[in-house]
Image (cartoon, rainbow, N blue to C red; front, side, top):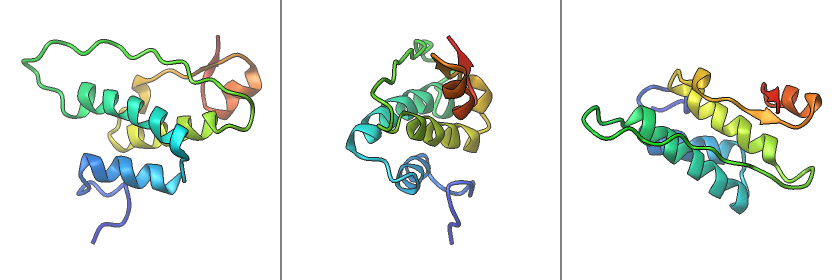
Length: 107
């Protein structure tokens, strides 16, 4: 029986879907989450060593306060942590308090 996304027997799709569900992402958050996790999975999880390198994803996640930007970032961090790759991403924010919430740095 699977216990959660930290369970190494889960498929990639299971990890992404369960993480998004656990974080109760809304439709807009799911879109951003899927873009980021799909790129991460193609680049690091299902990487074909003979394929061309995947271009770096640079994405601006913007919106008014309270729209769930930090929530999406924390969900992405959870997926990347599952694969031991949390160190491969940098999160930037315009203020120190916002950066502290996402374990990031200021621009």
